Length: 69
Image (cartoon, rainbow, N blue to C red; front, side, top):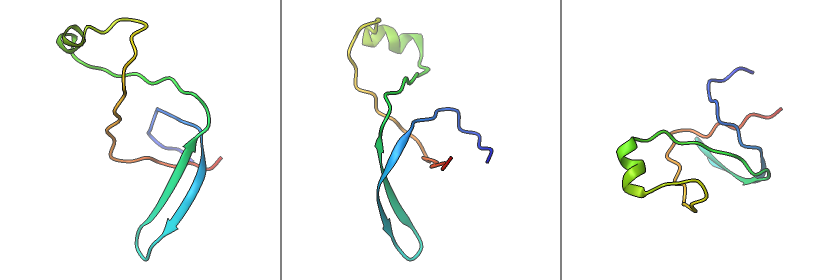
């Protein structure tokens, strides 16, 4: 199966809640992952970001695509 998403996070299905039209699937992330973000240099300076800083990542996405391999 080919798909366009580039970020891949391994996970295990935790639960499935099935409805008539939509279903909700919850996942446990099973492998630590590395993520990256592209932001303006002004934002990096405003946040005073440097290697080793602890930050909270807030992920804004339209879709999470489960792919069973």
